[in-house]
Amino acid sequence: MGETRERTPARCAFLTLSERGDFVIDDELAVAPARQLGLEVEEIAWDDPGRNWDDYELVVVRSTWDYMERPAEFLEVLERIDASDARLENSLELMRWNLDKGYLRELAAAGVPTIPTLWRDGLEPGGLAELFDELGAEALVVKQVVGAGAIGSWRVERGELERLAPEIAAHYADRALMAQPFVPSVLREGEFSIIYIDGEASHALSKTPKPGDYRSQEEYGSELRSVEVEGVLRQAADEVLARLPETPLYARVDFLRVEGDLALIELELVEPALYLRMDAGAPERFARALARRQGHVAEAP
Image (cartoon, rainbow, N blue to C red; front, side, top):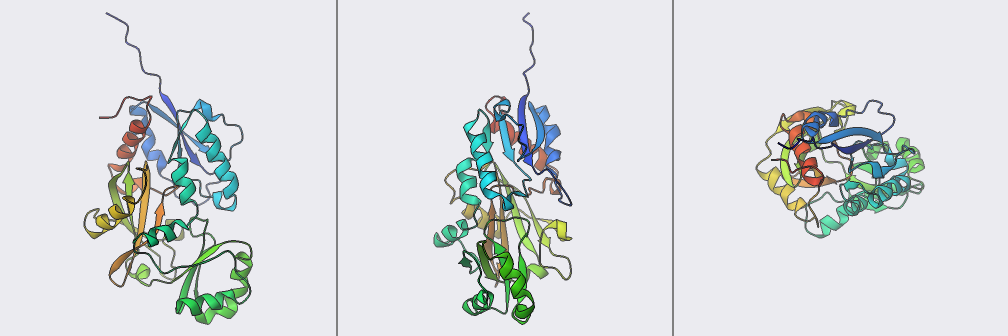
């Protein structure tokens, strides 16, 4: 009988950030099931200068949540990975499109329900008051066009203009921004997220800010609850994913309820938290999707 040889594990990199701080990262839940499928996963800071990306078969962007202050450098790293022997996920084309929240303008123009938004390349003194007037709102949320994790985000009411306008204007003096009417439903029922793995809806959750806050990220104390994947949430998210030119390895689609209907607030294709711990089967589903995307590994059953 011939000698049985073990398949050499394929090397996979999960890109993360060098200083984790208080961020909640659960990507490691997929490491053990990935190993069972022939992938050895290593977490690497995206800006680690000593990496030869040719040493990896697969590089997956995960918790790179400090890139927004250096987006050009981050994109250069992604371009180097894409030019190497490694397979980059999600694809460079999808992530380049998704890095700037201006993609929401395209989706809105294509008929996807979104929140009314004003876009500015920067903010001059007095510009914040103009945003209130143009949107006809008593409370706004101002966010970075390139950003994540609510960094550089403010909820501001018209009565707070005098106090907060100088700080907000200074932050956005040379930084692009988007402004939207504050949606109060986020305080009652939270933000809804549905996670897709290799084009299939995997699991869903709601994220409700803690009392006195408006931010849904768990680092700010929000309450996470699992919700049903099916129904109107699944239908709305499916319609968003159908607009993409290719099937992403991973995606997170975020909604708020506006006057009873779901409105898209984010389609996350670069570095979304996938909340693998919120569903018992999610880590294995993600690992199997990695194996299917990696040609060196036999396709997972």
